[in-house]
Image 1 (cartoon, rainbow, N blue to C red):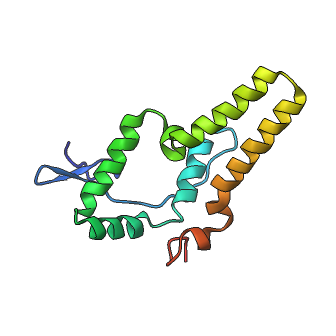
Image 2 (image 1 turned 90 degrees about the vertical axis):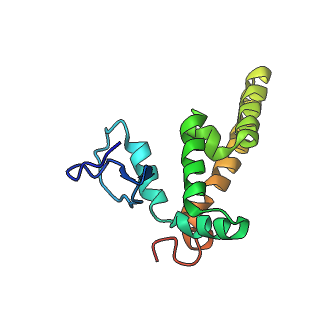
Amino acid sequence: MTSDPTDDRTVSVDGGVPVVRLETFAGSWPDDDPDANFKADLAAYSLADPLLTIRNLADNIGVPVGAIVRYLIARWASGGAEGLLELGPSTVGRMREAVADAEAAGTDAARLVAYEQLAAMVGWLHHGLDEPDATYPSGGAGS
């Protein structure tokens, strides 16, 4: 792929290697935008500087930063399910099991137990948004 200077969404090529510029996103969108949830995620993740973690990992294991970024993107793109990749198989399995158990029991009480389990998991997952300074130290959270 070649770079089109009029299109900032394209990937340039340097010596046969694709080069992508990491950008933040803080755009706005209408409430009825079918991609609003994804755009909100883009904006939320723009608070963090992922290269802080990636550089540390690259230094610790002795591989290029670009190799780790390529791995992360390829893993996400080939995973097919963003939620599974983000949450991990064990968390998704626990969430599914809570719902399946409640549906098998078929009672409101069992559904309430499942709701409470799911609410606790979602609360844990949302911690990074509730406490960005604790989650993204050293300036990764917009400081």
